[in-house]
Length: 332
Ligand SMILES: [Mn+2]
Image (cartoon, rainbow, N blue to C red):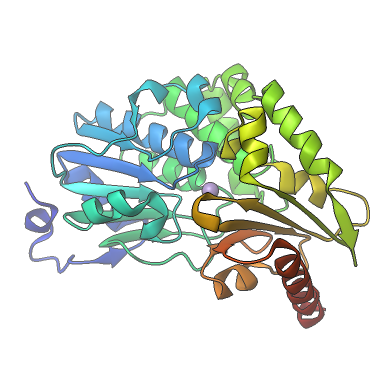
């Protein structure tokens, strides 16, 4: 059954907000859930929580992520995560935690446009690429929105759902430390604990580390320089090869140098395939770096954003440093 048939007469060809998204999901018989490449626990926890809820409603569910995430293996249902797309066209292709459809990867993007897209996201200026969009940038994690969708679908929060959502929220709030945390978030967290969230599994996921990661970190830290309150460091492909490290091993490095005393923003450049440089930016609350990321075709949040670029590492550092200082002036 197609969603369009059920929505017929209601002029629901496209709509925004939680209720249309909930109605669309409830009316679907099969759903593919997808999240962004290079995922973190918000992307994976949100996907898995939603998949468990939809399965409880008797729906056929496929959870897709192009890359997967090693530390998320502790999360309930992780074994169901596929890095390949299914061989059926679902009633709904539900994208979580993505500011643009392209974030799920090229193959996923081509697949998604063949059916009805539901978009659940919390990024500022997240694009309304879905037929149905539930975008709320005041939510500190996509997991918060997934919680609200599951509640509205009338599904009980099981311990496994609770564990996944708790991990999602804990990750995107730096374990409830970020100023993006509001009363709504803490109330949801309290309910998740009440419903049996397994905090040991959450802790294992968020504190997961390896020796190769520490070796990579030591290389990264040895290269840090700080100019005008902006910390910068970089890693080349060879560094990852040398330690047998993965891209995700360095995900938190930029946050570490952003926390150094006297630092107000941080730039981390890592080399990807084909000479592409992935630039990650972090800033203190008063500096909005999301505009800089968008200018270069990237995206993100006010204080955590990134983009891809080609060029010389030192020149990029200098250029972006100047742009961050400009952004700071604008907002003071
Ligand atoms: Mn997120």
